[in-house]
Image 1 (spheres, rainbow, N blue to C red):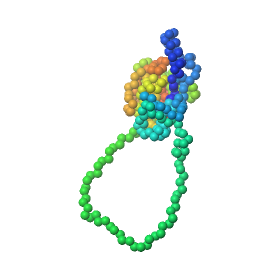
Image 2: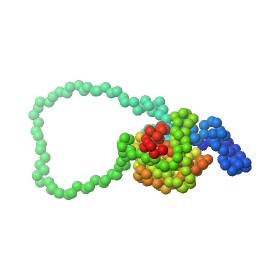
Image 3: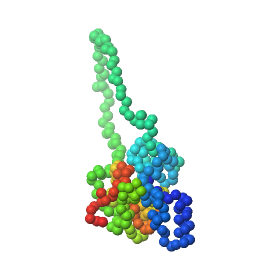
Image 4: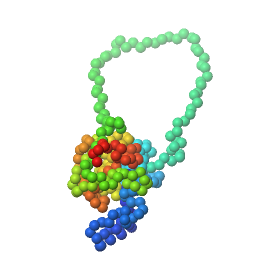
Length: 280
C-alpha cells in the first residue's frame, strides 16, 4: 500500500474502547503501538501472488498497495485502458515463472525452401479490360476521431505544493518510516493538485487513508492526498496544477492533516525532490 496500512483489528478495538472510556484526546499512535502502523507500513501490503477485487477498488489503488507499476499489473491480467475491474474478480499480482518463460522471445530458424524448377514455356498474358467499368466519384467517409489521453513527459511536469500549511512530518526512506509528507491544518483548509493530471481514484476504500485522492500525471508519476474531509473532484476528471481538489480533514487520522505522497513507477519517493524549493 502506498505507505500506510490499517492497524490490526484487535488493536483498533482496544484503542477505541480505551479512548472512549478514559480520555478526550486520542493518544499518539507511536506511543501505543511500536510495530508497523498505517504511518510506516511499506507498500508491500499486498504481497501475495493474487488479489480478489473489493468494492471501491481501482487498478491504480491495487497497484498502489501492491507496489507494482500499474502498466505491469494491467499486462499480467490482460487489461487495457481504462482498466475496468469489478468486485469478485481475481487479479494476478506477480508474474509466474511460466508466464516469464512465455514472455521471453523465441529464437526461430529460418526455413530454406529447395529451389524450384523454372518453367521456361512461354505463357499468354491476360489483361483485364476495365475501360467499360462504371466509375463513381463517391466521397470517402471520414474516419471517426479517436480521443487520446495526452500526459506530459516526466521532465515537463510543473510541480507545486499541495498546501502552504506547515510540514509536521517528513518523508523517510527507512522501512518503518512514513512514505510521504504530513501537513498541519484545520478542517476545511483547501488541498490543491501538486501537478496537472487525471483523477484515477477518489474514495475511502483504502483503510488508513480516509478520504483519498490519487492523481495520475503520466505513466511514471502519481500523487496521493489522504485524510481529506470533503472531495471536490470525481474519478476520471482532469485537473490543473493548483486546482482545489479537497478540503482537509481527519478521516482515518488522529488529527486534521494532509498526508501527501509522490510515487515514481510504484515506488515511494521524497516529495521534496520534486516540489519547488523555498516554499516550505
